[in-house]
Image 1 (cartoon, one colour):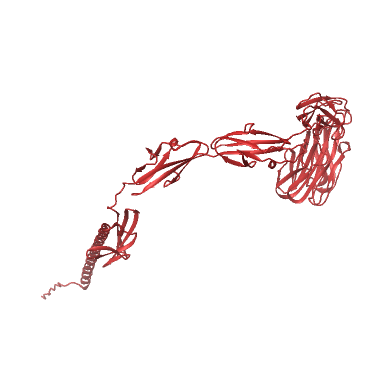
Image 2 (image 1 turned 90 degrees about the horizontal axis):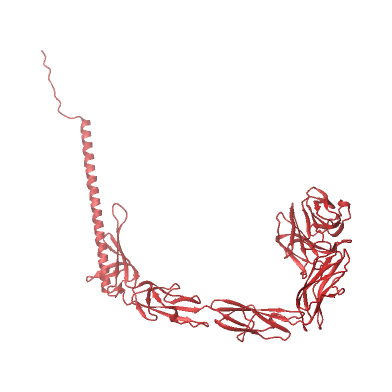
Length: 630
């Protein structure tokens, strides 16, 4: 029998050996990294400790420099050096091995400095590390917070008053009462100076105090705060009025005086408070009176901070009586109550007064005395008038020197053939304008009614300036054309012209015409038509109107906005008989406009009023106005 031999292999395979070696190498490398990182961190910690020592050394060094002389601490950036165990500032930094040290000195106040020490170095972890220490150093040789002096002084400026410094006590610093003019000791820092005030005085702070009375005290200094109380100035305006009755004097012809000192009319002058005397150099032809805040003798008392006005009126001495404001009331077919106002008797002062009337302006016929002999308003019943007649009238007053008359007034008696008379108009036309000055129609007198028919182009209504006293009847925009109608009852003293204006440049046209007689001057407008008519034809239409009573006058104002000068035909409606009061076809403004009027002898509806023109256009319009009867 064959015996098999048993073999036993006690060795390792190659793979097993390689795995074992790899594990061993990883262990060795990891262990080495751990020891390396620990070494780096240990090294950096040592660097930071060294940097801290250098920073603390810098603080101690700067203290030694301070102890030698506080003046050595000059603001700036420094390094440190030592010689013979004595530290000194050197350059802008110092270096020890890898460490750079920088000291920065800055001033807090005269006896205090701020010190900042920074040490920087490189390491393996980051490019640069730094460590900073800061401290404050004081001048221990200086005496701090003692000996700071503050003196408060007072001055008082009077302008007629009698106040003194003691009238404004108490004086306080931080709310504590102090003595005036005495040096007081306070800690350094901010303090507030105050005192009581007086409404008649203006208080100001100056010196070492600011405008609010705040002063900042610094060690070893003496500060002074000055409080000034000045009496508020008294102001006086002297105005001069000159009333001429045929003369030509102006305010500058009369020299004004205040306490014998010349002043100018209307100028604000400053004076001391108290009593002052206002006067002027007299003129024998004028009678001067003083009023306003002045007594009749020119005396005025001025108080601090106030403004007073003194008015001196010099009125020319009138020898002929003056009379104004004609009035009329209770008009019938044959009677009316006329009146006026006598404002001056003249010289001599014995008068007779009454009224005159006639059928032409400035009547001197039918003058009858009323019986009164004094100034003031009077009325007088006049009889024997003719029905349906337009009259001019005025008041008069007569003394031994002569006769004075009031302005004219007008009225129309009732009944008969009531007539409204048109007056030749005035016109303004401009192709590009922002304002228009239009003359008053020639011959207009008191109680006439005037109409201003205004047109301008642009999609926006630009009419924004209307003269005083004009009353709007209507305003309307038709496409690119704007129309407006205004009226005014003429007064006794109408201006020679009227200025109308636009907010921006536009084509601009105005006609002013007037009517006299046969209407109610107190409430003259009866009916208004202000409706656009946009059909593209030649008709200019005013809407239906209803008259409440007979004897009204209807006035139609047709217009067209189109190139060239256009004309109109009188309306044929209401039986015809329309009177053309004006025709203005103007090519420069492209606004053609007319006015037609007609008496209506019965009340009721008028229906529409049509006028025919020469332009077929939608840019047209027609206002219609009814004048109320007497």
